[in-house]
Image (cartoon, rainbow, N blue to C red; front, side):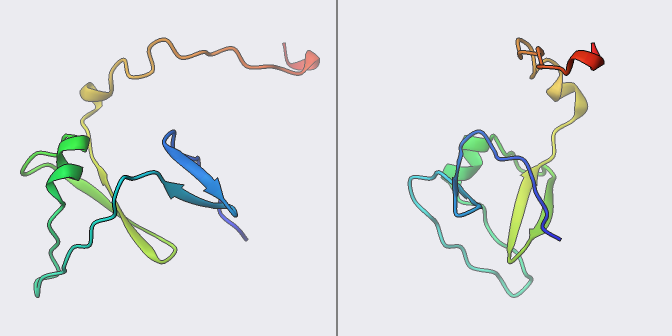
Length: 92
């Protein structure tokens, strides 16, 4: 069974695989304690601060880190979104 997931706004689809648009790709080294340093450019663009939590996910053959934000920080991020959705005639 194939899993589907939403396509991020800043991504493009290539052969059904999601590829994020980036200027450059950075290679980081895993330390003996299995730690990695998030490059400065990425930390700054995502607003990651020391001590902030990130969620680590395995997706197929890669690891994704997603910054965890408190619910209060998410308040209003959908303001102005278009909520009109085409509906079937029998669902109105």
